[in-house]
Image 1: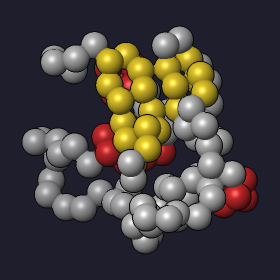
Image 2: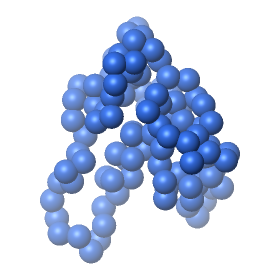
Image 3: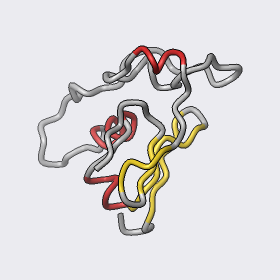
Length: 105
């Protein structure tokens, strides 16, 4: 937020979201970016594990199967995520996300 104008988020060696820092932090499009941001501790909150804690198996990064690498951990995964690797696509002004279910602004 204070260091860069743009942020790039990677998961398992692939770029999954890119955009202006404020936009990505305030309105993340990719479910992994949402999970990352939910893990940022709030110093005013009581201690505990977030309900949005990461679940599922880690992705296979060597010789992975076709499909989204985040699908096993994604709460929004659909059938298409299993068979088709998402490509980066525009999801807003200056924003890109590699997700079949990410919605544009």
